Length: 454
Image (tube, rainbow, N blue to C red; front, side):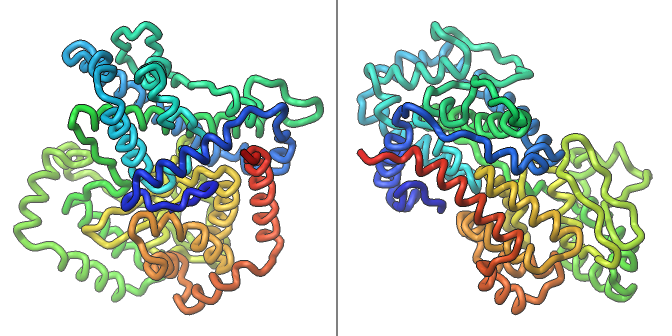
């Protein structure tokens, strides 16, 4: 679990203490200041902030927030009409409301890796804010998110722009609504403002959603990145993988062996059941594509790169002589299918894959730099840095460091023993690592300036 400003308690084992520490952190961080640090340092990272990957990520977050707020509106509309949501909330004892608030925060932070990090920008998730005026603070936040100032039934239409809740200190920290100083490039600043604001408002909306679900005894599971894979989809992919073994650097015998091992995972009963489901409910339904050509993305020294789209992660072509492994090709396909995800932690079936969406903006930029270097040429030091940066996220979903190293070893063709040594030495300075430290220093400076003594 990530730690912010003294938040050390385990969220699952000590939820009340965890929340108490979080509230102390937010109270300290969101004290109004006479002035805030300038954002001129963002100009140093114009290339990263204005890259297609970052812009696509911001756009994807915008769409996801619109969808979440529409779903929240639908839930609230139904409960206001049939279950008297507002009066029921206000009629609860303070202790009962606190239980729902705590559960809402715990569920939201545990939904996916890096979600807890988003809470650092959400002072509205404290009990003192939500419980004010006998519980009206919670309803005020809900009405602001849904644009229902008088508690009316919200519109359930999908918006093209999400509703963003302002906060004077948050706006001050990120200079939102303020003109860009003369001579400074405004574009990187605007991208950062949008990214952090969308991240903050997604957490606020998700917290309200989970609190209401808990209030009505409902549940909503978080969907992992790994989709349900039908037998036919898997067999088609394996066949194409075997056919393209030469392009991927495998011998023909290796390709056949891979196909045989994969097929062995399925019994005849599995095949019959999966084929029936795939025919009607596949993605797409097999009856709509039966007999038509099917291919999975593949890359090699002479192969065609994975196609780009305006909403995808940027995938640079491999450097001459670097052959991407099947595991790395699979990773790149997952990243393209999930452009809001920074990296995918893959695990053997039946365990789910987990998408990591790094929310620390400076850290995400540096991870993307390392990732692009690694997928271009398999740079071992870049791979080791990525591995270290994802260690906490992996631990948060029950993935050991050894398993994480094994994933990177398979994806980039680096022996595990070498990767272990590189991870240990990753603190040694190189030009890129010095830049990473500088970014961390600037980010820490920005955060430290907000943490005044009580």
